[in-house]
Image 1 (cartoon, helix red, strand yellow):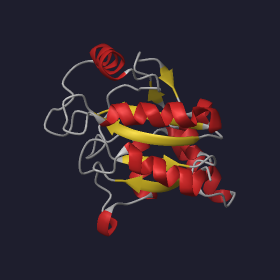
Image 2 (image 1 turned 90 degrees about the horizontal axis):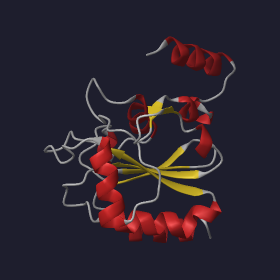
Image 3 (image 1 turned 30 degrees about the horizontal axis):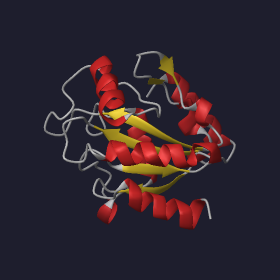
Length: 181
């Protein structure tokens, strides 16, 4: 854990704030263009965070994710894609090739980020946070496959976890009945 994150965690603990209150916005990330960033620009928006891959049986979900993004982006909602190569090497190419594929084949305009690991000792801090905030089936924190999705509310709290087989259309039904009703 970096010194900055340790200090931030200690500050939140001492002040009685929950880690979920703002912590997610301060986690260091890299954009698909490999520029340093955080999720700060998405504060006060709903975020659907998805580990993605271009050679996966669920890759066609890019289309539905883009439709969700277009439908709700003017209602403080964003889809964020995080390529991952931990599942059967289904994301073997570099960031430039990933972005070209996403734009060319699926018209992706939602923000994409650099490749990360979502499981194991090398799991990115964002995914450690997401998994501990919203464990999966029977309390397991492991990400089982590409296209696992986490819905984060405007306050930075993880409010839902969706399996890879949950389609963007099913998430649309959830959003329209629970979030944007």
